[in-house]
Length: 341
Image (cartoon, rainbow, N blue to C red; front, top):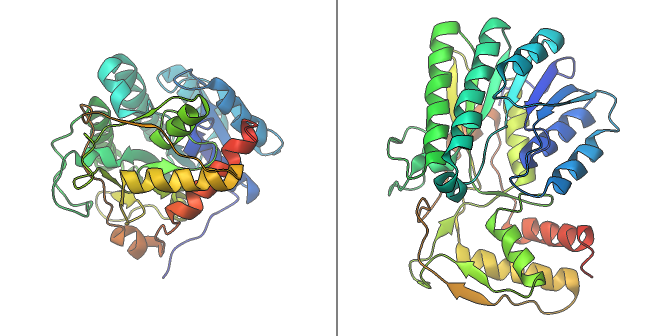
């Protein structure tokens, strides 16, 4: 397997650096001696304290520069490119969340479409070695064929969030074609782990348990046809990104797409039972969630399942952290961070 390893002499721009994936990627790059410029608008879509905690852990690194700003402000982006001349750009800034996009469409267009356009324009005028950007497994919509492969037809998104991510892929392809920008899109599959996003189900379930409230499960209580999710542990996501950074696409159009998923979908109920067990271990007492079953929500899909063959072929890596291991690390962190012992 021939692929180039990380180059610590390059300058990396990470957008969304106070976010879940942005924080972990920035930390890993900094630990390897890279110069990282982080930008984030630190919005209040979820608990801002968690974002500040992540940033506090990046501050001690000498080679970390943080800029509070928004990628939807073109001037801010151009100034960063002019001043720091990043070699490699990782665009992780985006308004996340499928359900939130149904109620608040404006913020998705601002951040995910206009913001990404500004990143592309900056890469056009200040050429970079590689632009890596976050797409999402949501682009597969309600595809019936599984596992999802990068060559699948993805023209039927079922949420505005998914539409914005699909548009990112199209925009990046066009800019690669017209302006020779080497670009790689990453379709992430349900990322979880310590210091994760509180709007994600596993985090919300844990919050509800400690608030003595029931958890809502949107599968109609149908255990035979339960929702399946390809849950991917944060370390696996970061490892996949890191391996791709120094390996831009080649060929006539320098644009590629990769799934980063666990290639091992779990029933939602299995995931919930595993979380109960992991919290029981962390707390040294039995934990059981009170459960309320409701119909599936608009924009949700029945199953996500990543084929990771392309990623493995390109950089010799396949995510493999089990939900037992990943959720135990989350549970231990949660109990410690929120002092729930």
